[in-house]
Length: 214
Image (cartoon, rainbow, N blue to C red; front, side, top):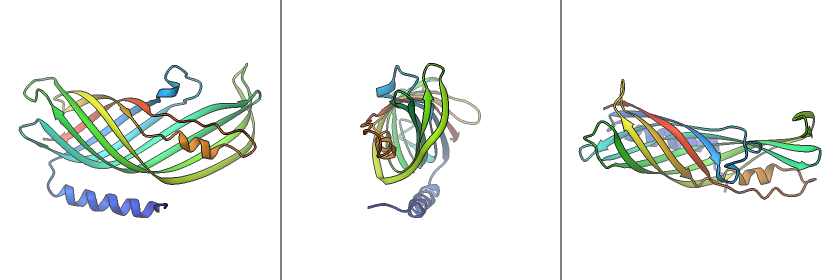
């Protein structure tokens, strides 16, 4: 069953409105993502990024943090189809995310935490096939293009973070793994004229989290 984008936005608005009334902090997360399958290959993955805007609150004297927000992940991929053709595709995923984090030393200047992010997103994708000269890294004419959308995907993202006080609020470096298999949508974008890519992968990420408030 496909979920209309408008329904996703309404859901996000309702959740945000409820939590906003009892929260004291805003949070912004920016991450750079790298598919595990392409960890040491810079030719297939061409820049993947994520952004989360949320609101949250601290409990138990700074040890426990909870936030809820909306995320947007953009992943870009390149694949050789045959000797002279290359596929270029992008996947955009939007949806709500819920994060909880436990701090082991809340009284210290530098604080170490472990957290877990749960998220559900709706995916859109575009893909193009080009004539490609691998020897000179040259793209020629676009042979075809395709777009697709899919059902909701659910992912779990464990991470660790190191934070310290900043201005106007705490700043943290986050490192973790995300089980989101956005790459599976690449399989739907490939042309019927070519063999399936059969690509699957979660990804590693590193990013910063900026908290505005207490």
